Image (cartoon, rainbow, N blue to C red; front, side):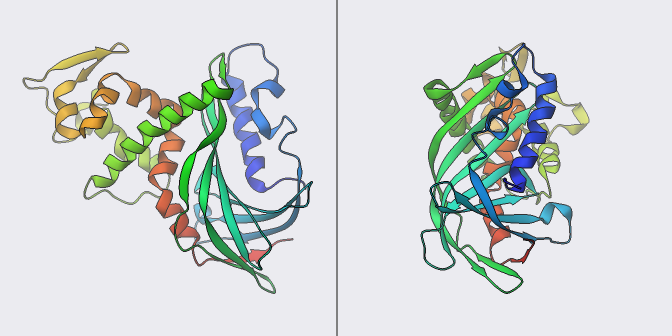
Length: 286
């Protein structure tokens, strides 16, 4: 087996997405690096697994060796199937440095696929039947270093995709910063729970009246129309931080939600992701 388990999941996601995509491009063209051959340049030398009480608690760590002999680490988590964490092993026993987060945020009409450069380190100490993972704190996200976008029949790559992805990232950071400032927010076990909680708050105009938050009111409200939707401008200004007003009123927030919900969930959960990894003991599979 030449790839980490994460990339097998990516193949399944891509094949599902391809069914819905318009155009006459070949499957090879639609599927990104998961099946274009570029990702099959590393040899898997070891696999370790942590299995918690639930399926979404599973963590897999793969030891890889590149063609030029570099030792690598790849970590995938069942709770965040759109994410793979990558690192290099510089030589010190057990020590490795995070290098990137590989993210595939797919939806029915396309995907955002990109790499975020990371700065941080951790320790994976092998034991007789497994290994122990220690992460002091979540690595710092530097910037998106590359990626591509597919939306219906449109494809973006190179600098054009990089600009669009970085702009979306700034909007997502603003959104998740605002989310973390809210009080009495429950813990989410998965992305579905995350979406069910936040959608009525973000877009009360698009849900039934009984699901709308208590602070939402149409009495004496001002409205603005964008993307054929009438947005309650008064609610926007009362419920959201000022840096989100234009994003919501111009429907950019809705487009981000529809096209990058998995990405938003990852960004929101960033510290929790690494908290869930710290101190776990993994069983060696091969």
